[in-house]
Amino acid sequence: EPEVTQTPSHQVTQMGQEVILRCVPISNHLYFYWYRQILGQKVEFLVSFYNNEISEKSEIFDDQFSVERPDGSNFTLKIRSTKLEDSAMYFCASSEGGTANEKLLFGSGTQLSVL
Amino acid sequence: AQSVAQPEDQVKVAEGNPLTVKCTYSVSGNPYLFWYVQYPNRGLQFLLKYITGDNLVKGSYGFEAEFNKSQTSFHLKKPSALVSDSALYFCAVRDIWGKLIFGQGTELSVKP
Image (cartoon, rainbow over all chains, first blue to last red):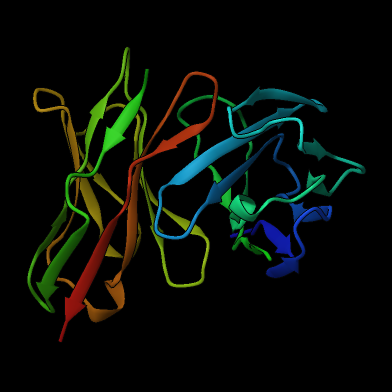
């Protein structure tokens, strides 16, 4: 089965620095998502993206966060000025359609550590 | 608002025994329910989904889930557990806007 790929697998950064997490969704998928999982906690929705714009975002997704699909394949999550509490595993996901009966396929995640 | 709950943080079973990981849901309208598994240091892997139709849904790796409307439950089951099934299991509901809403997760431990 096709896979969603994420790079890097691990990212260590200093507080206040900008980070960009990269994702390559499955090629024929049209809907894209970012989730995060703080160690030991549940998987939380951050943002959904369709047709080159944000469809929905959570309270977590504040002005420090942004997403972009710079070309036909990549989907990125940018954190402008990282905070300690941004340390988490970040998952990218995609789905072919946006209807509720379709599954999301997830990447293996990027473990972000903010020091 | 749509939500799912997993009442058990941890489930322990012996290899070869049946396993059940519990999930209850609260949705308005038709529920679209999913189970995902997360192995250590890996992403979330899709196991199965319930959309409509048969209440018993079969998925990957021998897992199945039973949808029960009257009890608003969607428990994950497997007749005979393997040590390799040890992982974190997440129940989820997909809302009408497309996003998945996850439960807290249940750690399954299968001992030889």
